[in-house]
Amino acid sequence: MDRIKTFIVGAFAGIAGFLLAALLGLPGGTATAESSKAKAAAIEDGRGLFNNNCSHCHGENAAAEDSFYNLPQLLSDQSDAFFYKTVIDGIDDKGMPPWKGVLERREMAHILAFLRGLEKNQGLATGTRKSK
Ligand code: HEC
Image 1: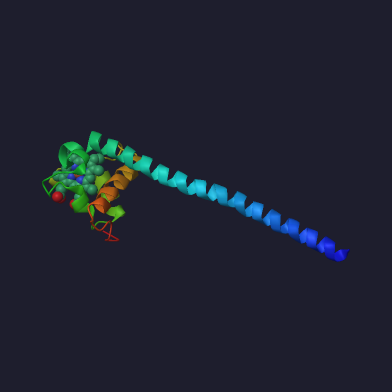
Image 2: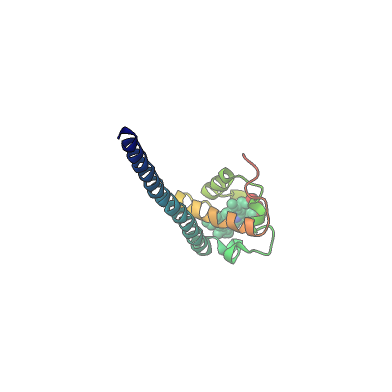
C-alpha cells in the first residue's frame, strides 16, 4: 500500500514539475520575442529621429558619401560613451552642434541603436574602443 502511495505521489510530482517547467518556459520565450521587438522598435525610432535631426549633415539614413560625415564609419571604432559625450556637447570647432536639452538620453540611445545596426550591416566593427 505504501509503495502505491509513493508511486502516486511521485507521478503527481513529476507531472506538476513538468507543468511548472512548461509554465515558466512560456513567459521566458515571450520575453525574448518582446525584447527583440522592442529593439527593432528602438532602431526604427532612432532612424526617424536621425532623419529629423541629423540627416542634413550626416546624410539621409546616415549614408553620407563624404567620409567626414559618415557616422557608421566614424563611430565604428568609438565607444558608446564617446557617442553620448559628442552628441550631448557637440564638437564646437568642427560645427557639430550640441544636443543637450534638445534630445532626451533615451532618444540618443535609439539613434545609437540605429547607427550600430548600420555598422553591423556594413561589416564594420561596432564600438570596439572602450573608452575615450
Ligand atoms: C550642422 C551639421 C550637423 C548636424 C545637424 C549634426 N552633426 Fe554630427 N557632426 C557634424 C560635424 C561637422 C562633425 C565632425 C565630423 C568629423 O570629425 O569627421 C560631426 C560629428 C559627429 C559625431 C562624432 C563622429 C566621430 O566619430 O568623430 C557624432 C557621434 C555625431 N556627429 C552625431 C550626430 C547626431 C546623432 C546628430 C543628430 C542628433 C548630429 N550629429 C547632427 C555636423 C553635424
